[in-house]
Length: 154
Image: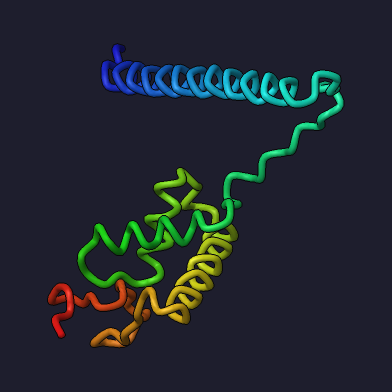
């Protein structure tokens, strides 16, 4: 018995994975070029430098973010949304953007805590504002001076 849907789905999946492999090869090629440029610059300033003695720094796990990365992502989301968003929506969208596993409950909790901390920090710095929703639930967050009706006029 033929299974054209299964074959079609497998071909699509293969194309998706092949595309990811190509993108990763491009990233690797660029990283090697960047590394070579840094090596040449080091040798320019210190011709006797032993480049082999420089240890590679391990990359953080995928769910770890570099300083300011979560804040920037949240601000971009709030700018693009045009309407207030709750913390759960922001967490879900952030995880989707970073291609994190939405089925991992422990990871969701970790990202929720990180998003909540970033939102409170931004509120304390006057960048965002929170408001209680009409019918209970999560706080709604928006950029400071922007509400559901658009930018605040003074």
